[in-house]
Image 1 (tube, each protein chain N blue to C red):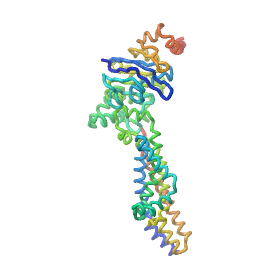
Image 2 (image 1 turned 60 degrees about the horizontal axis):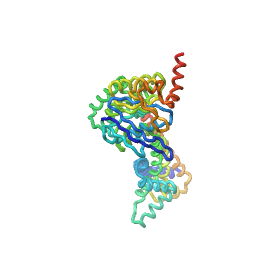
Image 3 (image 1 turned 30 degrees about the vertical axis):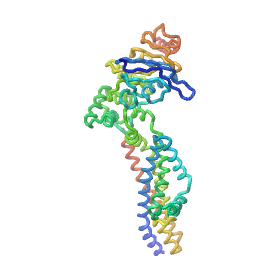
Image 4 (image 1 turned 30 degrees about the horizontal axis):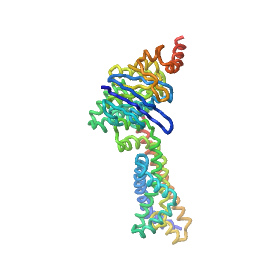
Length: 243
Length: 217
């Protein structure tokens, strides 16, 4: 059974059609890359799957059940981290374990430490967000989501606010998670990363799916013309850098 | 002259504690009520929000003096017969709550959406989000505005003399009119209120520093 099933998902804001009937089935352990121009509905799709934005019609099922925000089935990592500034990294990760999972303090802290270790931040557990780099903050946000053990992880442009070096440290963490079998949907403009990470890539434009294909096909010569047009600028840049 | 001075000191000694008690309790009650209203305006359904907005607008749109009159002299007509200090405390609390609620509402609005969405997705309840996330995150931002309003409310306590609350202004005015030394007693009043507001601002700055330290890495 698919771990995530999105069917005929539509979202409208006033007259504007944000998502025009999206279908997607994700198998356990898959990493789906979502690419497309700005305003194509990539982030909206993730937000609708997470239940943060209302939909007009369609459905989202996680392991066969309708997902409700906060039920723990879906975890999301945001572009702007969303860490709570008054709490240390450990407290950020442990808070929901204590309040929602009702774990005793010691157990929650131990689990938080383990999640932080997984993203390589054991040494920074006692620091508040203001004392961490952007890349470290995003890794704490990933640890916070991981600790709740969601069935599906959504990444909404997780490196858009980071410089190239910090981007690399965050992408490495996401790559490790994918290699370990975490089911995930990743919206990103890091094309090389998406190509290397994804089992399948989805290209969105104007709220519609233009193509879903394995990376080799999506980034190869036989992609849809709209996809090729979009990727051309990126490939030109890479070609320029490689001389 | 010395008699006026000693009478003023005695009056101040009697009136200042009343001013302080009414002010502190009204600030506490007004802040709690204002926080509740601010939070409800953020979370509650429209049917609850509209009446709250109406009350806040009426309180903000009428002079405090008029509100005191209505409560103290108008109250008995509808069976609310309050002692002057209790009427003063209630009037000041409600008046403060209307303004406090706006400060808290602005604070709630200033919390970055990603912090709230993250909390929601992780399964925190609305109450947990308000207490564990929103309140601490906005504390530093709203503190200067809260202090400012608390200082304004100290000065508003003087209005309570009109409904015969035996507070600082009421006591000093009595000395002034008995001795005809109106200027001198008014000067004592000015200095007294100024000292109170300075002390409040000093304390607030220390609280601000504490919160700053708590938020620092």
